[in-house]
Length: 43
Image 1 (cartoon, helix red, strand yellow):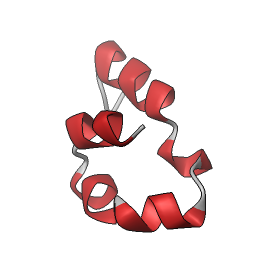
Image 2 (cartoon, one colour; image 1 turned 180 degrees about the horizontal axis):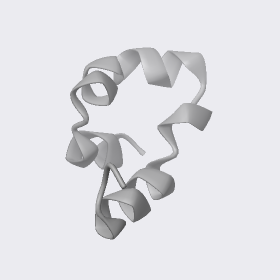
Image 3 (spheres, one colour; image 1 turned 90 degrees about the vertical axis):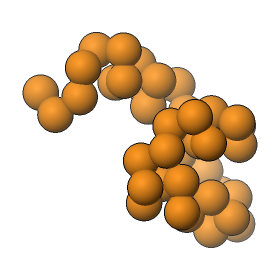
Image 4 (tube, helix red, strand yellow; image 1 turned 120 degrees about the vertical axis):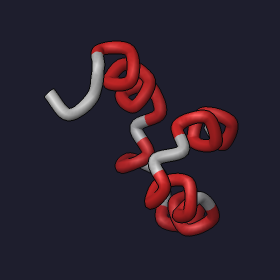
């Protein structure tokens, strides 16, 4: 596995891949950087 179970759960909860294009564009740095805290804050 690339990520531990806790990280996988967090990423699945964020599901950034389902975000509308505008929201994704506004948070692209967090996606590229793997900043899960920032992604969770953007929900």
